[in-house]
Length: 121
Image (tube, rainbow, N blue to C red; front, side):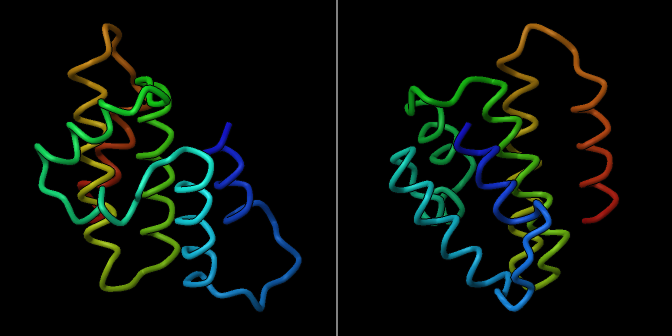
């Protein structure tokens, strides 16, 4: 629910177009920290093993939630189109790969998302 609320806040047709994506990112980080006790800056700056361990240690992240977070990160990267975009796309790819490892079901949508990220990188 938190990830959906954050996605709605960032991309859900806000009437206040004067709010920059950077300001929205600051809000996003605060919401994750306050609501999910998840430090997105620490997650983004960690290597693959550390960030996988960090997200799996958080009880609020099921495979579905991890996939939603990956979608959010890739959506932010494509909207932001800045120097950080590549880092966000790489983390989104990492999360989708983690979902593939942890999930017992194959997801065509997940594979489409992975392909879209590979093309963007």
